[in-house]
Structures are given as structure tokens and as C-alpha cells.
Image (tube, rainbow, N blue to C red):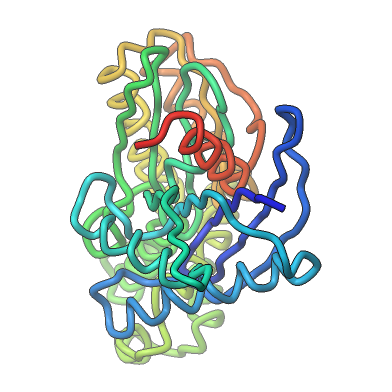
Length: 317
């Protein structure tokens, strides 16, 4: 049985989906999950990548031990398309999916997970995918197949429009309330309680602890959006700034790809679950792109990876 493998390798977990192509139709035959990945240059980055691909593939193949993966595409966090890093990752995929007996897996592609997500959400034609979860990234494609991406450079460099950004700005806001630069508001106490802090000094100490990272900042985002919905002016400003950050990226992608009335699809926990934030994003986009159209994703990132795996067989690189 010859199979296609599509992987969605994020920072928290990795999914593998296997499809059998029969008479031009995709038949799902297995799914598996493994640990997350990190940047290949991070400590144990290559080991984590190998473990994620190998474990998720083994789980997906558990009901088809004799199945042979013919082509594999991985959308992975931290991979920049067209770089030496991409080539390293592809070598690791071949190693993780070693077929034995000297058989080589030729059809392999590793790319950024935003590109597999775009292909899954919009399999054909033009459109823009906005992903706003813990982090953020915006990627689009025009009818000629050209793609452009904005954001997604990591929280240290560019997180505007993400749950991390909302929560991070929220903590900053509480400190300005605490030292008197701004009037106090119940939001300060809510955020400090969630963080387990009772003073500005405790906040300062908390955020430098090793276990407090982007996910912990992102968990504070709902408190900020709720406060904005209830009229807290500082929180309202945060939501507007963060929404404007996403809108700026969407506008840039549309301009670079000459999309006048683009289809826009939104994914990620921040923009799908925080309705006040979603509304602010849509309002901001409408101001810059009045003809934008809102749509729903046709499929997920694993589906996009599988479509790209099929392309590798039909149109080898």
C-alpha cells in the first residue's frame, strides 16, 4: 500500500495524517500524534524534530504496518522556505521515515506550517490566511500562485496581533496602573491573581521565571479582551493596537499580491474564540480593504500538506 503523509509540526504537538490515493480520490487511512518541535538550532532541536516525525508517523501507521510512504510533506514551526534550514529538515525527515533495505524516500518537502495551513484552508485560487493564536502570521496567494507572508518572526521580534501580544500588553498596563501613571482598574487585580502575584515586584520576578513564557502571557489575553468589552479604556487601546497589527499585515499581503477584494480566512484561538478581538480585527481590515470577503477554511494544515505531497508525485521538484 503506497501512502501520502502530511504533517503539521507545531511547538506543542505534531500531527501526521496518511492518505491512500485511489482513482484520484484521497482516502484517509490513519492519523497519529507526537511531541512538538522547536527551531532546529535550538538545544536538542534536531532530536526533537526527529522524535516528532518518527513518533507521529508510527502512530499513524499502526493499523497499516506494511504501508509504504511514497511522499511526505511537513509544515513545521520555525522553518523558513528556501533556506538551508529547510534542507536540513528534509534530511531529518528522510532519516525519521527510513524505509530500510537502502530504499530512499525521494518525495519530501519541509516548509513553514503557515504554507501548509494556507494550502489546506484555500486549496486553489487566491486568498489570505490570518493565523492568530499564541503567535501570529499572515500568508496569502494570488491566482498566479505567488505567495507572500507577513509576521510570524517570533515573539521576541514581532508578535503584534497575537494572544501573546494581548497578554503582554495587559501586564504592562497593570504596572502603569500600579505605579500611578494610570488610574487603577479591576483588570489589574484579575491579571495579578491569574499570575499568582500580589505586587508589582512579584510581577517583575514572575515574568523572568523559566516556566513563564509566551503561553502564560497568552493565557491572560481573554482577561484583556473582556475588560475592553466592559469599557476599560486601557484594554480597549490594547485590543485596537493589536487588531491594527494584524490588519496592517493583511493589507500588506493584499497589496503585494494585487488582491483587490481578497478572500480572508481567520484561524487560531485568539481570533476565533475572543470575539471582541475578532470584531476589532474585522473592523480594522474593512477600513483598509473595504471589499474584503470573509470565508471558512476548506481544510486544515494536514490536509494542505497532503495536497502538497500529491503535487510532489505529479510534479516532482
